[in-house]
Image 1 (cartoon, rainbow, N blue to C red):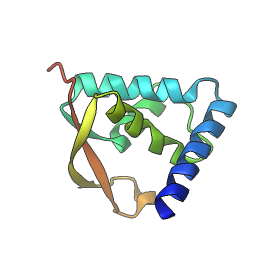
Image 2 (cartoon, one colour):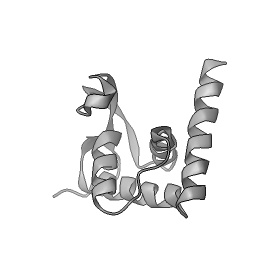
Image 3 (tube, helix red, strand yellow):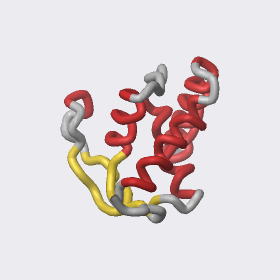
Image 4 (cartoon, rainbow, N blue to C red):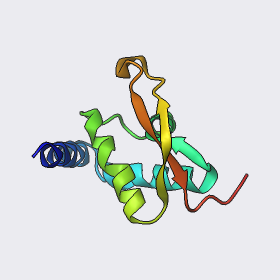
Length: 107
């Protein structure tokens, strides 16, 4: 039940981001792909910071980012590769997923 509620919340947040900013999900996924091609290991936090610094609007709810790595993993771009401590002070040093790229092309 908890997993279903989590997944529904992330999907609702992503759908809301799409409603507020046209094709937000697709644009976020494109940034994820760019990272997976250019970095062997990274976190969603890394992608999020890069994407927002390069024109992707901040979604109304940060949970919108939750669906993006799932989509990238489903497409075979990434896999779980460990944990790290979040750098964002708002996350209060929680652990975040480290992703290993399956499509990394090197520097």
